[in-house]
Length: 343
Length: 218
Image (cartoon, rainbow over all chains, first blue to last red; front, top):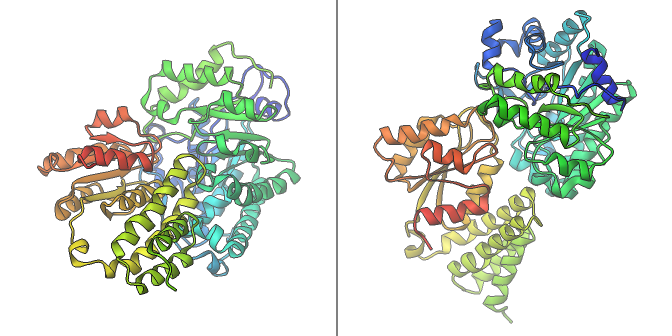
């Protein structure tokens, strides 16, 4: 019997496994639910700011049989906040979100402070990874980054940001460059602390919003720069892109991550046809996991396996109100079933 | 020699489609100097251009960033032309809509697109922004005597708020006067029916058709 980390590593190395792993990375792809929080008695808004609570909650996700990984953090506001944006920590139901930006135009990027990793919530994440690492277990630790476009559009008004990609193209690249360098630093700190894999989610950098040209010019380019830096440390990468992919498969194929993960509106069968030799992760409907029945979720899980998905995961993380019973039905369908793949 | 009105109007429409904000302002000034009526420049020039842009968006030739830049060009032109509208046009009451992203969610790109398209189609939109407290939809609808309320969310965690707004509208006794339309990632026609909303739209272009249908506007 493979340990979770062995199984995931084998998939990353394209070796045969007994069944696909079932993971949920964290970050944008949140895997914490209200029921879980209540069961372990941790207040969610505090877990975003306290390394012990963050680590305990991440460990609970695995220990309660939800997913075969640890992952931190549970939101995508860490980087934005450490860059100076104001964040509302949310509640046990709502996730944290940015409420105040720090610049009005990409041209003002030089005003943004660098991330201070000795303090702030970046440090919380790093400390939480160290605590998880200290457990010395067989569970892979996934460190998460908010993608460069999503980070950039969290520290200024997204509509202005999107327009300035073209209107102030040079300054937009300078801004993206700055953000990306800081993200690379954050990734390296997470790796140093013990992260086994780095996942990058860039929900604001979709093909649907940007179109193929800007997607390649801004999303692919800067995501790849982070990936290259992470791969240099011999650490695997997962990249999650939201939205439909039809218009941008060729561009997405240029993303050099080990694993690509997509939204539930993407047909994995179609993704498999378009990205024939890529490792794919996904994409059991987040909506179905929150509002559907276990039987339906099991069917969706099996369909992903059949469509050629290498790693099973909720499409866009979990809705906070998803029941543990529903969440567990994904992994149960894999361990009970006879889903064997050649990764 | 002065340029014909038709030619200027065509250049306005093209300027919007091509996202050329400065061109649009230049042409608008030339148009006004020639003494042509502002109303035609808006409807046949700017709005026509925006409609062409939304057509391109529907055909997936244009993407969100393109539409945002087109709308910038349109709004720039509008702000110059509006003061030149005759009082009868300027004061004409347009059907009013309230729009916003429900509490707990800050994803507002989709909402912004819907607002742009509805404004282009001639509706008077009151934008409450994002992360909007649910009661605000009701209070604003009442205050503005709105004909419809548009709500969006990208997250399953926050979609329940839409149901609450429908209930609050009912409690406030104005549910019958306002149509409720919803949209966003996890939203579906089925969900709209379940919570008693009047309609669901999968995108911004459809939203215009939906609202026109519900309000019985050709």
